[in-house]
Image (cartoon, rainbow, N blue to C red; front, side, top):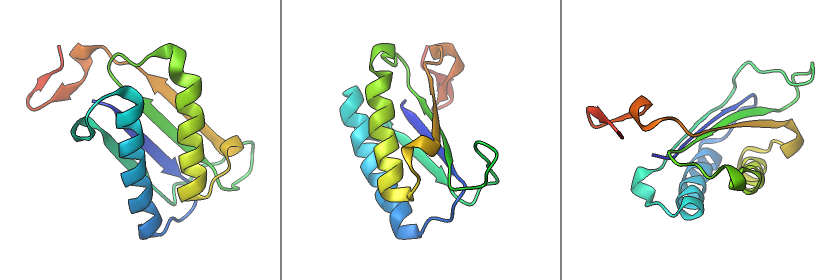
Length: 115
């Protein structure tokens, strides 16, 4: 159930969004060794966000996955930051990423949970 949510302060063209969604889905599936059918990626642009007291382009992202390997989060951060920069035009030094490994009982799918 990998989930990547990205909120971006800048407008993003539809072609760039689609490319980000497609490449991020494939990349996350590969990084975690899970099928793409389980990966959800969401991007929302033109959000009201400031970072460091300025409204310069910035993003906030969440990367959630059951059994997320904590020792690999630095690698995941680098990869996701690069994808955000490449497709959404936001520098990695203007991106925060929150990693989470939710309990299986706290994540629902198909009318049940992953417990």
